[in-house]
Image 1 (cartoon, one colour):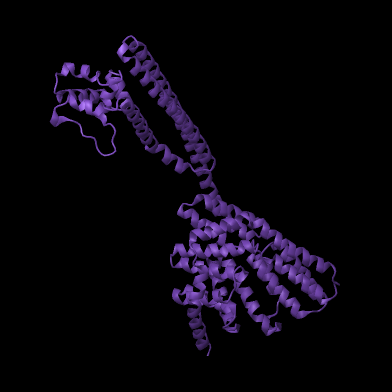
Image 2: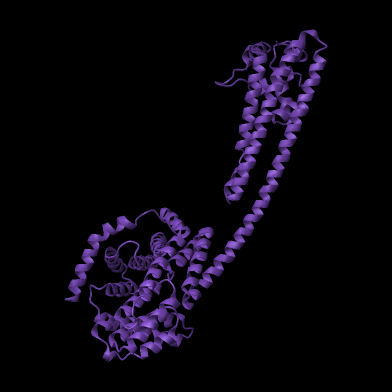
Length: 530
């Protein structure tokens, strides 16, 4: 009969699977963002729990200590502290245990001892938990408390098997845990949440992952979001996906579980530090460090020895890695500052070069003033080019200041990788050169609108230059445009056009070889173009 009922519930779990999936199939990236927000807002959730506890304590203070209401209000406060602050939870359980013993409430004594033993076993207080269980005579327990008794014994021996360093004792503890688990399954209703939890664990241990997931689907369908049950079931589901080596789904359910823990202000949790360990293994050091530090602070708030031992190792590892990463980032930051300083010096040098060029143009103008026929052209050239170069200087200074602010912003935001990519890119340089040459071409053709046609007249018909669509001047025309402006030194032309001197020589020689006049007279005719 039990088997048929279990099959029915498994079938029902398959039916509800699609409904469950729609609630928790958010992208993992989005879940991580939501989890980050919850971590940032955790003090708000703490305030909510503290407010509930304060309200319960006020109610307790107004209650007669001899009444059953006193026992009930203590129990409510214990429930608030159970997953929040361990030693406070133990204190209120001890108060209830003393009350139940004083007033001869045997069932309440048994129930409180079992709760206290389970909490102590979970918190690493194994001797105390064993002593409390030893005080309980199983034969005197009400039937309804047998599941709690067996579950508590199972929990104690599981915890002992995990933390003992002796293999012989570990084997013994595991055998005891299995025995109590069998006893527990024998007294549980197959519809109870604890039965499904243990059944899921057994199927997973046997490697029957499909059956384990189906049972977890059923459990998940029967709990509400942002409840302790939801946090527990999603954590168990993450363990199933870990066993199946599905890291993406493991991360998803660890995040869902941790999110519920934080929103409920549950400080006794494993989800977040397990997620931090997984993120560390994947290389997400920043987020792993943030999560493990938060989890460590919450563990200290909970104040249970076993939880501190569980998180200390991974905290130390992530902390060391994070510090090494920060040191590496600082080294990169120093490199970026050096690069920015170098770029600043180069810009200053470029401005000095432009200034020297402007001075040379001014000297050229003074020489051209001696020739009456070129006075107006020289003045026009001066006004056109000085204006454009001054504008370019202003533009480049503004861009440098914007670049400096952007670099400062990204360094402050820790976006060093993006900054390094920008420093390595030639995009800014190429864009600047294209803008410089476009300004030069426009200014030159404004001064000499017929230059291309007149220049082609100096070449053989079959050797004349044909510009591409949208092109004002090409490299060859630009070289002779500079010569027409009086810049005859090939090294200066090479420096402006960012070619080698040999390349400029070759261009000049190649064009002169195409001329329909003698090579010696070519530049004389060039200078006559108006």
